[in-house]
Length: 235
Ligand SMILES: [Fe+2]
Picture 1: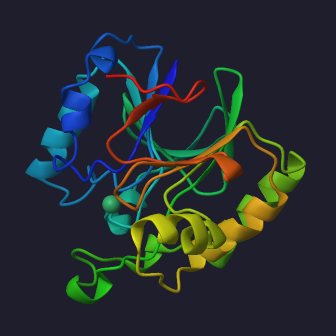
Picture 2: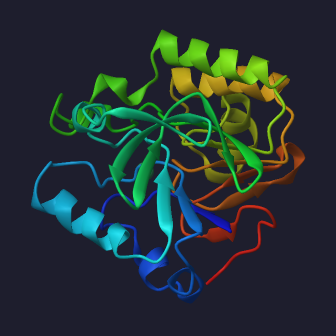
């Protein structure tokens, strides 16, 4: 089974995992997918070791797309491997980073992944210490995503991103939560994907609340942990 949740930010937002009895009962064949701001590749030291130990000791495999708050110097220093049809960084035996623009086949489900977003608090962060320009994807990553989607005719089972498409942020999300809309290239790109893709469900994180947008079959995740297939919440 595959379960999915929102931003974890290192130890800051993992109560939803620590307190979750369903997750504690999973097996090594199950997956937890985090929709970015994993925060376990951050200082390259004790903090990361403790976080990675936590995930490595879980019964399930942890997968994550990158958010805007990751240490991209460290993340990109891991060797790239092929895994289930797409490119990954293998962080530990039990923790895998699903790279941008890939389509994975996991448990007979095709899952398009595309991390990254613009940091709203960029002005308060330090280049190379708490902020990296790679938070927003490169032209190569946008192109690779489109190429991989075109190979599948833009038809996938699930889309998993950190940000949401810009039109959904401006309309549904902003209407409900009065977000400050930024000039986020990732959101603009995801709008292009939204116009062409055929999918069962789109999951994203980033906005730090849980919200269901039925007209776009899109679920914004933060505290909820859902079964990716049924969208049922597990506790
Ligand atoms: Fe976040």
